[in-house]
Image (cartoon, rainbow over all chains, first blue to last red; front, side):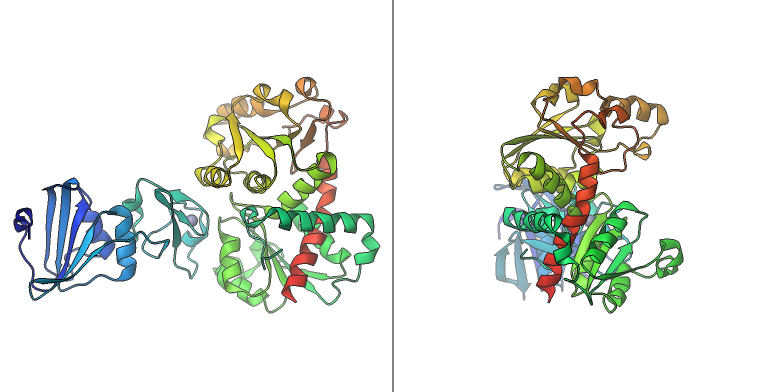
Length: 152
Length: 304
Ligand SMILES: [Zn+2]
C-alpha cells in the first residue's frame, strides 16, 4: 500500500474505491446508497495527493461489495476509479471501472416532462454517449451534473 | 420498413422513407385499389392530448384502407383521469386493436408504450419529442415539389419544443440537404436534437434572422411560436413578430421557394402568402391521408 492510503484506516472485508476524482467521494456514497444508517463502517479520504489525478478521493466501505450496476454509474462520475475487493485485509481483486454502454435505474431523468417521471412501471435507462448520458425515453442528454441525478 | 413501430424519425433510413413515399404515391394515383386492403383490421386512436387534425387524418387513412378505428374518447372521460398508467392502458387496448396510434403529452410515451405491447405503435406526437408521421408527409410534399436531394431547407419558429421540427430535421439527414434553423435565441434546437444531427453528419447552420438565409432557400418550413413559451406577453409579441412572414417578406425569396407549415397556423403566415405561389401547406395537409395510408399499410403488413 502506498503511504497516502495510510490516511484512512485499513479494512478487513469490503471494498476500497480508489482514484476517485477529487470532490466526488460523497457522490460515490450516494450511488451506493450509503448514508451511514445501514451501520456499515465507512471511511473517506478527500483531496489526497495523487500522482495520477493530482488530488483524489478514496472511499472504503466495510462489509460490502459492489453490484455491477453500481460500478456502471460509478464509472460515469469517477472514470479513473479502481475498485479493490478486500478480504482478510488483503486485496483479492483489483479492477478499473469500465464505461458501460448504458445504465439502468440509478439515474433519474432531469426532464420533468419525461414519461419516466410520470409514475409508469419502468426503470430509467440511459445510454452512455460522448461525455454524458442520454435518456432512452425522451433523449435528454445529461453532461456535467450527473451526480445531481442519482436516484437513491 | 425494418421496424415494427414508428416511434422517432431518427430510426428511419433513406430506404424506409423512400419505400413509404413510393407507396403513398401509388395510393394517391389509384386510391380505389387500396380500399379493401385492410378490411378486418382495427386501428386504435389513443389521443391523450387534444388533436383534431392528426386524429382525423389517421382515421381517414385507416378507413380508406377498409380498416375500422376505435378511440378512447376525450381524456377527461377516460380511465386516464382515474390514474391508470399508460403501460396499463396500452396493454388493455392491445387486446382490441391491430395497431395503436398514440398522442401523449409526455416525451418518451411512445417508446414506453412500444415496450409493453406487441402490436405496432405509431407515435403521433409525444410532448416536445417527435412526430414522425408528420415528417413523412412533409417529406412527401417536399419530394413532389423539388425532389429530396441538393436542397437548402430553412426551418423556422419554435425549434426547441416543436416536435415536427425535431422529426423533420432528423429525417432530412438521410438526404443531401443543407439545413438552416431560424429562431429566437431562447427557442433554438435542443441539445439532444443537435447531437443527433451532428452524429448524422448533417450540414446545419443556426440563425436568428430569416433575412440572412431566405434568398438561398428552396423550402421554408414555418412553425408556430406559442405564447406559453414566454414568461411575459410583451416579450412574446416582440419576439414572435420577428418570425412572421407575409407576401412582402417573400419578395426576397427564390421564385421556386416552397412554404410549408404543419398547421394549424395562427398568424405566423399571413393570408396573403396563400395566393403567392409559394404556399404548399394545404397540399401538405392533404398529403397526410395517402402517406398515413402507406405507413399503416407498411406496418400492418409487417405485423402479419
Ligand atoms: Zn427522459
